[in-house]
Amino acid sequence: MSLKKVRALLNFKKKGYADTTASSFTSEDMKALKVNFKPSAENEVIPDVKVINFPKEYEEFVLPNINKHALRLPDFNVGKLEVSNHLRSFIDWLHIAETSQEVIGTRYSSTDSLVNELCHKLWSELLASEYQVIIAPKLLSISYSVLKIHFIKSFCSLFFDKSDKYENHIQVHPEIVIEKKDIARLAIETDKQLKDIGPMTNFGETQITAELLVCAYMNINSTPMDQTIFFMRIISTYVTFYKAVISEAYWKELIDGLPQEQSVVVQRWPRENGLRTGLDLTEPDERRAILTALVKIRQHILLVD
Image 1 (cartoon, rainbow, N blue to C red):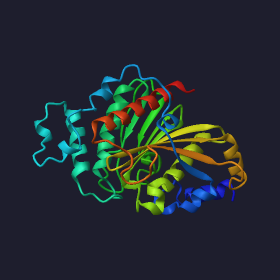
Image 2 (cartoon, one colour):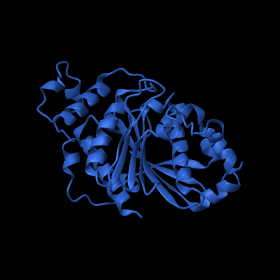
Image 3 (cartoon, rainbow, N blue to C red):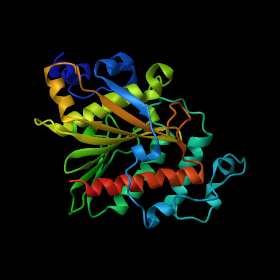
Image 4 (spheres, one colour):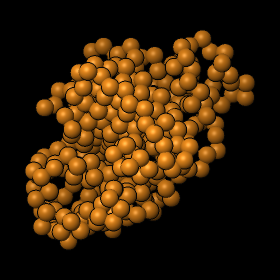
């Protein structure tokens, strides 16, 4: 199978964009492309970067009194909390995500709004002088517009969906990609795209495989190169981090057909893979762990060439 056929497998040729839903990418595709997931320790996935001062923008999201028990209280009222408006919005979406009975795989869920609020605040305001931010608002129909906020000193990009590049009506996955110098460094996928999620799709890791390869392929242009991509999966309020190192040799094999000797190992933390095995955003300690991981990934992204 040639690289052209591999791209066709991801539906580049047929549709002009990457259709990487879990239902269209299977475990057999993962085996053919020699992509394997490995349970790993935190220090094997998250960059070993010392966090001297936990950023204020992240600290305020820890919210030690907001936990799963508090969010589930019958009389919980976010309007009575003495917090800033953006934190109230975050807590509100956290409350909805925790208490709602939404079906995983819905077109637009409260998880999307929760991630939108968290990522927009943490990345765009913390790195306002360095990032261009593109935000896709709530999907009300197949066709929608995007709000663009430009910063003068822009060398990185944070994308909430890339539909503006595909005639404004084709949805491209993953929802969020953080780039530096046009190279994807971190991708984020929320549960609304993990259709039919369950053991048959390795809880969405078949889709993650496709999306990692799409990001990596778009990075290399015409020259294969070694690259490291981080991935963050969110199912409801549960967060799992991934790290993939894709070698130049792997791409060179892929040009001539399916890889024979080379392979890709995607490391996963926390180690287990399931619907509720990730770090839980509703619990303060685990929320801090998630934010700390994002701080370290951010610092790593800024340090790499």
